[in-house]
Image 1 (cartoon, one colour):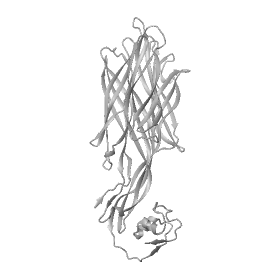
Image 2 (cartoon, rainbow, N blue to C red):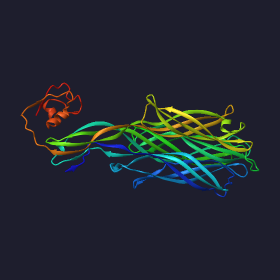
Image 3 (cartoon, rainbow, N blue to C red):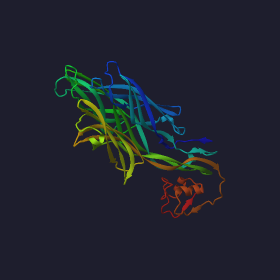
Image 4 (cartoon, rainbow, N blue to C red):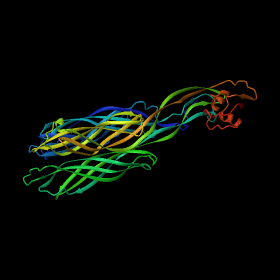
Length: 513
């Protein structure tokens, strides 16, 4: 006889945590109506959240990436173009055989672009190679109820010694796409308005869990670089307009409740900008992704007992995880470097900037977790009618409320202002972190028990046991072949927690029925 009973031993466990390099390459051809490329200034990749498919021992991820290209044309003016490509990568998944796939898999992928290498290959052609690091964490449900084998046991006769444990559960919502619109009129000036480029970030300071949804309140921060052209099509001095468009959006996350903690990440995809009669109309597509986590109680079996049988037990260790901090937080960062250090002339004009950030280290600081990383500001400047780019790196650090074993974090810089101060480039920015933290908690559980019928030992009609300090109601009952609840009833005791050290507190002797 063999059976595998469910006794509230189902728990969500982490089955994979992989970080691997991924490379995306693209050959981009600009339309014929675009100006030719004389000098490439930057190529900025914007990866939209991936969808995934699991099968064949691996997870396949795919999604769109938008490359924002800024360059100067043969006339010396600034131009930009966007090219949307598709990216894909796979991550091997092992050790799924022991998990129950009927409840689905929670899979989280974090993409962090590392380096972009681009090369102009023709008047309107360029090749792009983007290296990035991908971290994939996967969770699935596992049944930790022990496997029982034997000959004559009856289900109702088997007694289990269980401990209540707390274990984490992560819940992940699919990305939602929606559109935001804004219209504005730049300061008056002479000449016809012309769009150069537009980029955006999502600022999410308010993320709260509700019933089956995560509510996100924030802003889309859109930077639009424009210029005015004279009647002879001569480009004037470019200038930047920053628009902050508020929104409130819900992301469906099945199973999440108001008691859960949640984090959310956002990406600005395509930005459509039109200029007409001195007014600027912009439409931006946003994508949101939300995750929540909570804790749930689970009964874990550490011993079994069947009257009239001897149990041969096998134990194993499982690594449960406890939910830690989860949410969005933002903080201000400032830093500067001299123009001489950056190799930049002293008489430049800063025209445009954007930034990205990355957490590089996690270490313990007292009883708290400390995060440190770098913010990279990309700056476009002009000097005597010529354009150049510079990169300003600013270190940052922040501390969490408590120490954590594992920290999953995604960074963005929704606001970045770069100015010239005392012959130095100064960056003032707002960094946002979307955090989900956890602590591992190894426990020993009973994995398998085989019952072997034992010969009954001759006993007197009434037997008395004098328990030692280490005895519990459970091990005394098991020693004498008496169910703990029967032993408790015969002695006027509670059998609610028979394995606890105080289950026989104050008891001098026990009557063994």
